[in-house]
Length: 122
Length: 107
Image 1 (cartoon, each protein chain N blue to C red):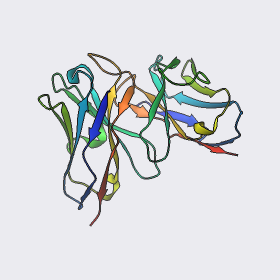
Image 2: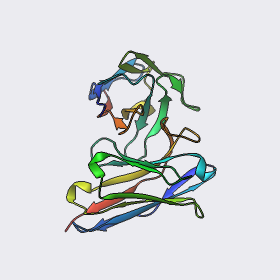
Image 3: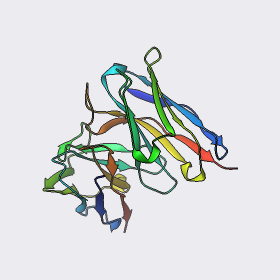
């Protein structure tokens, strides 16, 4: 079955970086764009950006420009999300999610990873 | 950025009630809108795509409609498993944005 499995919880200090991975299975990895969405405790959903696993192209929300990097490894069907210069406001659950559209972006997301909790605390 | 304003933010309802949630976009987004349900501690689940297309496996008591920049999610008869948070999302242009959410509680 189609699955996105994310790496485990992280605890980081302010100013550090965190890298979260998302391994895809059950479908052709390069067919669908992948998004990263985060949710602070008790809050709503915030889109961070997306990556095209085929060509590696990315689009980031302006809010994260300069400290967000998304990469992919087609040999392992894995995408990575690295967020640097962490602050307490980055404490959230981070989700990867597969776009419905095949070959292009975007049209809603139909498969979500289980989420990865990132805690930023001194 | 396209703003999505959801209303209401909180709603108390009873099993069997008909419930309507509205999402208003700050500019035209065609039908490029999706609705998600999220239960505590879980990832969101896609219910409706392109404003009115029911996702496979979603019960037909859920429906979506659009009129200009106003989008509506309707649950025709609330079931116990429907008490959750609901979010709209636009994918018309980057940055993709979400509504602030509607929390459905049992009355």
